[in-house]
Every structure is written in C-alpha cells, then in structure tokens.
Length: 539
Image (cartoon, rainbow, N blue to C red; front, side, top):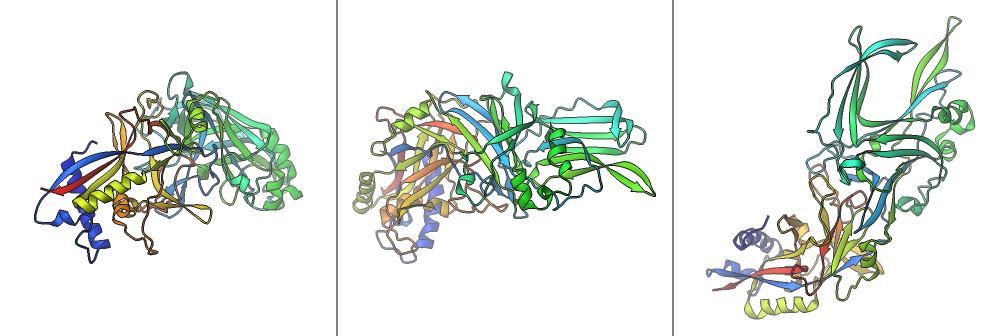
C-alpha cells in the first residue's frame, strides 16, 4: 500500500483544508498550511527524522475481567464477548498460555430438580466461537468439512433406544501459533476452582490472578475445529437434537451428582451467595505449553447437566428426563488468565535493557499483557520543524511514523493471513497518573496506520498531531499543545456497531493474540524507525 507523494499530497490537503475551517475561523497570515491555498503552487518535499522508540514492560499483566474480554458492541448495544485458550512457544517472545476462569450459578435459587431422587446421566460443557464479522474472523466458514450423515441404531431417547441419522459439519477455528502438523490437536482440561473469585478485589480483575484448582472435572482433545450436529429420527424424520457450532466436552457426572444433585434442598443450593462460595467455579485450560491460541465466546458457553427424577402420576412412579443449564454469564466473575515463561527469549533481554533516552534497537509488541512501545519525537526535531515553518513558510502536508517489521528476527507464519492490529495514543502525566488520549489525527477520524507488505512496514499517521505541536495550537482547556510521548500497543479500539470508538482507553489488548518484532532506533540500521514529514514550499 505504498502511496506516491502526489497521492499523499492530495489526501492530506483535504484533511488540512477541513481542519483549517474547523480550527482556524480567523487564520493568521502565517498559519501552517495557508500557503497551500495561495495562487502559487507548492512544491512537495519529504524529510526523515530519527525517533526515540523503546520497549515498555507491562509485567505480563493486563486487566482481563469480563468488562475487558470483549471485541466491540453489536447492533443491540451489547458487548461481543471473547476469551482466549491455548498455548504457544517461540524464541522471540517465549511461552504464552491462556486459560479461562468463571463462576457459575444455578438457574434459580433452591432448585428442586422437578422432583425427588435426581440422578445425573451426563454433563456437557460447550465452547462456542463468536459470530464472524467484517473485522474479526473466529472460524473459517469457507473450509467446511461435511463427511455426510451416518446412522446409529441404538441412540438413547428417553427410555428407548432408537435408530437415528447423525450429521456433523466442522469448521477450523482461526488459530495463532503453530497452525498445522502435529500441533493441530491439543488437550483441554476443566478443573474445579477452589479460590473464591471476589469481584470486589482488584487482583481478580487481572490476567495474573492467583487462582487455585482442585478436582479434574473433564478432559477432551480439541482438534482445531468447531462443529454443528443434527440428529433426526429415522422413523419419522423428526429432529431430536440440534447442536449449534461449538466444541463439546463431557464432564465427570459423579462429581456433579455428589456436589449438585445430592445437595437438593440443602443450604449450598439455597441462593446464589451460598452457591458461589460452595462451588467456586471452573477453570478451562490447555495442558500443553506449545501449539496455538484460539478465541471463543464466554457468553455463549453452555454447561448442561442431564438427569432423571421421579415423577408420580396417579400413584405410578416413572423416571423423567430433564436438564439443568448453569448460568455462566453476568453477574458471574470471569477472568482470562495468561501465563508466561520468558526465560531465554529475545524479549526478556530487550525489556531488561530498555533505554528511554536513546531508544532500543528492536521493538517488541504483544497483546494480552505483553510489551508495548513508546515513541518520542525529539524536541530538537520539533524545533527544526518550527524553524522550517516560521522562516521558510513551509507547509506540512503529511507526517507519519514509519516502522519496519524486523526481517532478521520475525517472519509472521503464525496466523492465517498474517494480520496485526495496533492502537496509537498519546500519553501524559497529571497528578501522578498517566492519561491516555486519542491523537489529533484519530480525533478527526483519520486512519491510525497504513500497512505495506513488501517491504513490510507500518505508517502511523500523525499529520495533525505534529501540525498542532509545531503551530502551537491550544487544546479545549486553552493550553498550548505540547510534544507528548506516543504509545503503540497490540489490539484495536473497541467500536460500536456503527463504527464509533468507545474511547482511547478501551481496546482489545486483553484478547489480542498477535505479536511482532519491529526495527527500533538503532543508528546503523537503514530501516530504523523514522518520522517522515512531507512539506510544501512555494515554487
């Protein structure tokens, strides 16, 4: 997506023209960009300027409770929930493993199981993916595997064994990591949680929360696919079961017999407050330390307990089937747990020697609590641009931060199509707190960055941001806009169904599986990070 200077000039000219109307109702004669509207044409020039770029250690921790495990808002205004499971290990970033913890609740207080003597038949946990959107793909819908229906002659329905036809369709999930070969399958475990998940405690809102586990409730091998299942009776072709897209795991029915069914009428099931302290939750995790990561929808998970109970009619006792659907959504405490082992990795060395004065030679950016990047425009560069503006009447046409993917250390072979997402914000300090704001360009609705594939680099758009600093524009509080550090992180801004960003602090960093290595401020590297300023002067 390399742009010619002419195309850049035209595009940014429109932006500056619009900003001149919005921000300069009575422009001064030396207003930056005013020369573009003179009767004389302007000559475009581009100059590169070195930047100070450095790694930011986020201590492998990020807020990852239910309010952060979302990718945006749907048309109904509710959040699209997203969690991450799996594990991946490589030399640049080390090992990363993602697990998920949730409380669960009974459907109603003092649940009576419809009758006496409830006996558990089976328990099933279903993991589902979110629905695909234009921006986010969770399963590969055009890679369907449908071997065709098959018959089963002894399928249990009630107290009968009947002949049915079973049809299964499978779709690969979108993976990040080792996406083929022996790593296609991984073992998923479900454990009982033995730590009370107190939502009023900040520690239980973060990805490195200390959560203990007890009994293993179930295991299954996930083969990288989610599937639909449809079961119909052979006799009359009626549908007896439909399983929406998901991955199904059998859990220990004996555990649920003793811990749930046998507690009928007892204080443990009397109300939600008692129950979440008695049965504190479940943890879902990958057993391996290498493979891949994938995303699922916590709000669409199901935990279903199938059981039979006694029903007496006219003095006759029969066994009736029923099911109990546990509540796994709000107001339950839910946390994405992320575990890291950075020993011997390149990022460990880079973070230990991070230099905010001179910058770092390589830049590491990773979602889910991994490192981010800080970028400073040297004050000397700002002074030189002010001189260019004041003395030469040069008009800034465009400004972008160009940062190359490091070809020596990073080849993106870990995801389906190699896409990455970034956020760019400004940071400042006030009363000992770090404030996060959109850049001036983002506030005007400009694209945050453009991607070029060959050679591989990103251009982060900072035209209005630099323009405001050089011009000495004042903010809404009447303060002159100053040169502030910029912050690049993995993920994207949370948006409504209409595309409006929720705010500079609201991003998908908590669930973003991507990572990459970029070229930093290494002086001898011809691809080092640069601020590239395009300006116009009169002929």
